[in-house]
Length: 231
View 1 (cartoon, helix red, strand yellow):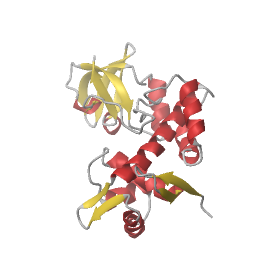
View 2 (cartoon, helix red, strand yellow):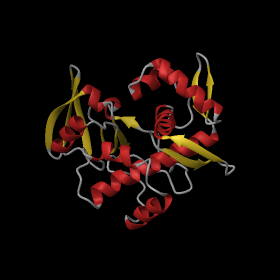
View 3 (cartoon, rainbow, N blue to C red):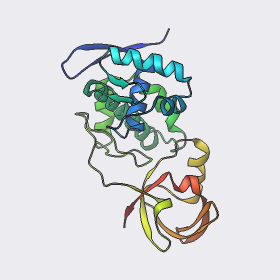
């Protein structure tokens, strides 16, 4: 039997949610960048489930007042759904930070652990680990951590490394990759949040860049998942 968790919406009403429902809400938030509508096909692809399963779950979430779903127009979060999504995101990113900073995990090892733990930690535990780490604002991948009052920290509009013109450089702010293989590659190349990267030239589907005094080819699909800020 899957565990059900009790949440409260903005009016204090009790909501009993499954881990799967929380996962859906979190992914709708991430795919929609907080406010935009998300297509059910995109949601099915992200969660690796059948479109029919998405339609069924979205219907349940709509009955709970957590999402709004218009046929052929996608699904969006209500304010109640948004708060649940932000709570899960805060748990996840605090846990990733805690595992790296306090327990010595590599940044390529924490995603799956946080996926499991985010559903079961208490608000007291969340507050304790945030305090122990000095209330971090970003996780090891550079992603912003929602605040304790469930709002997103302000940040500049990101630009991917793939969009940076040749001859320009920037500071790596966020790493969009979550899979271990690509995070391991980036780690070996020394590309972590805070790294300075200069674009040299496009070479086919790859990008030649310079970082840490060395130049190398970076796959184009990976360059699209590295988010930069001006130096």
